[in-house]
Image 1: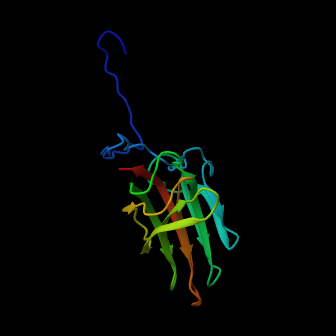
Image 2 (image 1 turned 30 degrees about the vertical axis):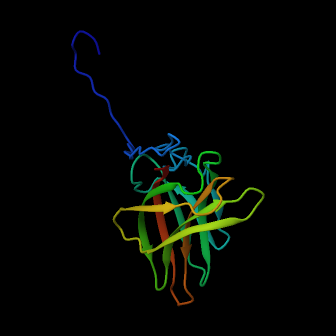
Length: 186
């Protein structure tokens, strides 16, 4: 705008985090890539969906134009999307990681969603830093915020994993929509 004409700025997918610093001066940096799926694909994500279907959808995302989708109806199975080996060189034993995401969807008998965080050891192997859930998505978006303290050896970074799991019960399924996945070192 010019000559005092009105103008406006539109903001979308704004994320506010606490930038608490540690003794090394770090903290507050986003570790995920494409956590909002706004590339329109799974850039930055690794998927294990042999038992289900993983896709990026435009159906009612939490913000922006896209969200991730995981559907599974194979009994006694799981389907997983994850950000693998993120933050290598930025995270260390003792660090606190805030993981946030928004979920919606539906589940059948015994269907659940879990959030997991792993430390990736140099040369292979992982340390399970925690399992959160089960979560039961509904039609409305729900914000999940979980804090993990790294007790393992994250020399090759961390992995943030979203797992959908069905039971052996007839009719078990998970239809998950996930958006705005964030992992921040506190």
